Image 1 (cartoon, rainbow, N blue to C red):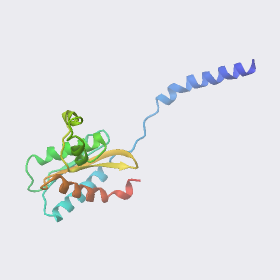
Image 2 (spheres, one colour):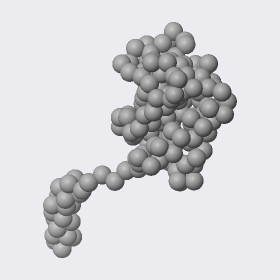
Image 3 (cartoon, rainbow, N blue to C red):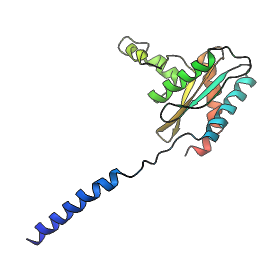
Image 4 (cartoon, helix red, strand yellow):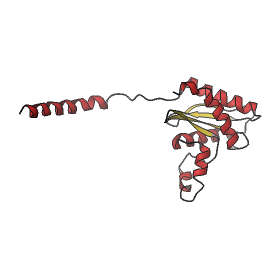
Length: 163
């Protein structure tokens, strides 16, 4: 009889505590403005050093633009293309170059039809451990592989804070 009362008390405690836990705010890692700006600066510095003019976009955990800069002398399309590359990398959790390679097969080509994604290199996810907290994309260098080198240099500027 005593164990039945204890079981009922435990059940009541769990049932009553459930709503309290459900109301707690989420705590998650995300891109800060300072981090986004440092990544953009590092990306542009690398591309400038390599002789390329690029625009850069950083998206946050939700895929929204956290910061975006149109590089001096870049073509008009580079702003939007850098955003699309970053969004693709964020939503897939891989580089946009990997996405391009993965979707060049007939059985995966339909993934290219998802609104807002592009199959072009130049973006890299920003991770804390295995958790994707955003992505950065660049556009303007002659080829996505070159954009990606610049983006990796930008992420390297904040690597110590991604732990």
